[in-house]
Image 1 (cartoon, rainbow, N blue to C red):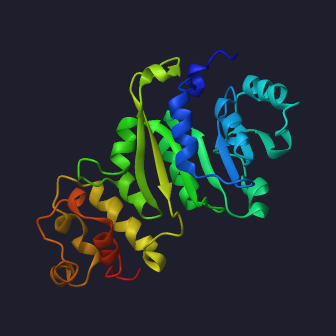
Image 2 (tube, helix red, strand yellow; image 1 turned 30 degrees about the horizontal axis):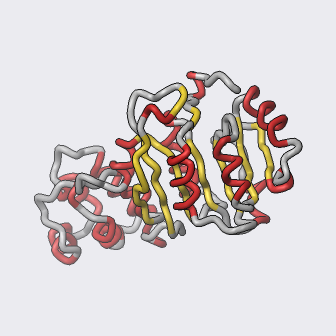
Length: 261
């Protein structure tokens, strides 16, 4: 057994139900390719291998890497496991995944890198077809906009795929218990940015709008349009609207009207 490292944000999952929910929601078939991030003690890794999937597991912790090498060296599914020693934010995953084609990301990720990691996985090639992630419950709810209010995070995820919450995982399901509850989130149908050739415009106006949330949407982004009143009318957006009330589709429509750089 490993002692979790606080500096790496390690919280080892102990809940059989959570593991079952992760596996079942991922709809894995034999020989499907999975990227697992931070396998730790290998509890989820073992369940993934039992499905017949081919797993590429990236582990930063020296101790955990050695532990995993020893744990799986004689297993019957060892041939389906590729252990990579490194930081997922620095490792070139294309080296291990590009030749394999379609793959999913399934992981209990360190919470302190959630935002940057999701962004990396969605925006860089090779891009997964789906992701099943264990994240803080509050973050999961923000991604799906459970309260009906969009954020830059929710729009950033929805621009590439379709997120939904699978289940809540209580903090007592981990060792050591984190300070908050967690949730399993599934992001499916991941592909290129839904704004297509207007992706740059999309980021330009959404970032400007959410950095000036106290302003109306019209007040914060009108500079990007030749005739902002007309653009807002065409796109069906009220001039007094706040950025959190605007759905993805209307952001994409607004992106198409931005003055070319």
